[in-house]
Amino acid sequence: MLSFILRRLGSGLLLLVVISALAYLLLSLPGTDVGRHVLGPAAPQQAVDAHNAELGLDRPVAVRYLDWLTSALQGDLGRSWFTSEDVSRALANRLPVTVSLMVGVTLVTAVVSFVLGVWAGVRRGAVDRVVQTVGVLGYALPGFLVTLVLVLVFAVRLGWFPAIGYTPLSQSPGGWLATVTLPVLSLSVAGIAGVSQQVRSSVIEVMGRDYVRTLRSRGLPASRVVFRHVLRSAATPGLTVLGMQFVGLLGGAVIVEQIFGLPGIGAMTVQYTTRGDIPVIMGVVMVTVVGVILTNLLVDVLVGWLNPKARVS
Image (tube, helix red, strand yellow):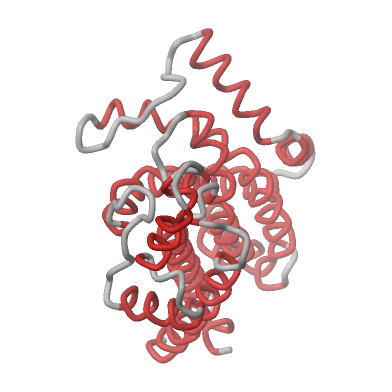
């Protein structure tokens, strides 16, 4: 297992370098005059050229990328070209907001999906049809519509949760829970629809295997057969889909953070991308890729623990 983890980390580091190089190249394509954006349209061209040279934009792209990569590997992501704010500090301030959403969505999706999936897979008939209908609706409903309905009902009409804003966990656990509940629920709907259907299909397939029929014929309690034997084998596809859902949450977080006014990485990405602030955007890229690598590694380790065949392969 240790060699497996080391190989995954090595391939992840290579992936990080490749993606960062491609991102830096695309962000450095001609057409964006950073100095003009910073100094304004009324600034003389000489001042604009001097500012671009101060930022190092007069050097070749490859040289600038290697300098950035060397500093990034040492923990220095540079400073924003527009606000002079330290990128690492800006990310550290905003990362807890997005992580709160992503972890909350993952936990809600995992618990609800596995409960619904196992229930539908074991209790065929009306329960199965209801779970499938819920899954189809979850896929069909647009995410922004779900978000707006939740805000209208639970924030505007009932007043149970705030419509906008964020309270840090360290400041008030209750306030933090109130501010992340609606965003988490809005992002969880589509994930629950996908993961629950995958778990349901896996449970049905495992329930038909010979060893499960043998265990049931020996008179073992149904709950023991399901939770100790069936779920262990059926959980692998669900965990894989759950990991993919976690990776894809950043795209949904961009919209949700904008709607709820949350100061997370998603909102930060939109704000600085429109300016062409390469240090900040590259910092977001680094954080995102590292999150993807660690998530995939965790999923692979869990799958290997649940399924020895996968661990050997």
